[in-house]
Image (tube, rainbow, N blue to C red; front, side, top):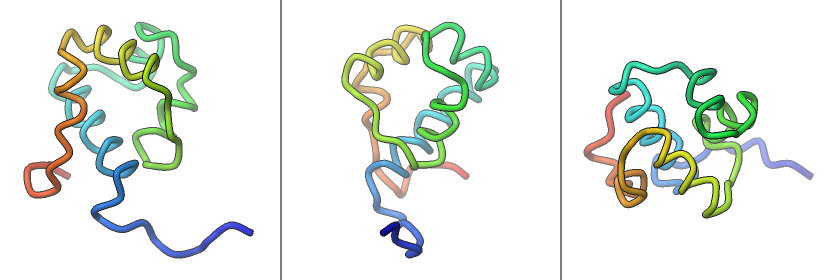
Length: 84
């Protein structure tokens, strides 16, 4: 049974998704463009940004490469520093 409880603002999947979206927007890219550059499906990328999907380390590495940033930049999940 799926939970209908809203995710916490400290949910690591939500924080990672917000961080990914922030970095993507700062680079001026769309979800479609990042999906193409990283090899992920656009629908999967959207789910990650919404905090609905958990992705594997290899996909984090692909996203970091496409964003031209170190993987550690994607993992800076301080909720006080995230925009949106």
